[in-house]
Length: 217
Ligand code: AMP
Image 1 (cartoon, rainbow, N blue to C red):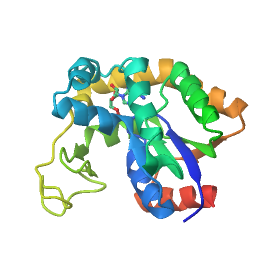
Image 2 (tube, rainbow, N blue to C red; image 1 turned 45 degrees about the horizontal axis):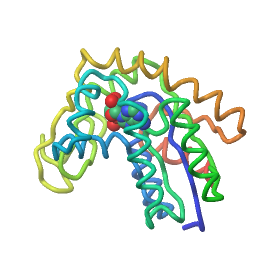
Image 3 (cartoon, rainbow, N blue to C red; image 1 turned 180 degrees about the vertical axis):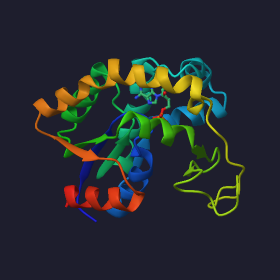
């Protein structure tokens, strides 16, 4: 447990950010904010925001900046985020990063570290296509690497696991294209601010965890 820790997990879809974010958030006692989870929640509840976001998400495209920034702003201003946070999947564009900086500056806060996860493309595709998600508690599995104890059932809450629409093979390529075009520029953006650390995302979950803790300690 540390006093404050403000982290961003950056990297392509399927690189393992979500799994590691879950672990780091528990380890350091900070809330994990996944914009993907927040958006999927809104879609599930069929809110106005969710209905708007769904078409973009199903196509593997990014939801418009102002929608996502609004969601994050609300969360970061809430009491639970005053002593730190881990952002998983945000920012994903330069305008989102600029808005985040403005928001943090206005509170006198700064980022401690941006962890940039890397993984070869063939590994990314394998991880995404084998991913299975719990629509209820958001736990994430992989058919080979992190299988649930009972096939197709969430270990945590017992719900039926699903394959996300955007994890289907036809959407993976377009998500990777969107990542390279719109999100990858953030690598240089945060390098220039001296807060970026690169993390090799290959290997078993435990191996990545060890590398991650070594970087953060
Ligand atoms: P993820 O769970 O992080 O892979 O996100 C799933 C989908 O939610 C993405 O493919 C986007 O459609 C949308 N999304 C999540 N985070 C963002 C963001 N920061 N900006 C725009 N769209 C996002």
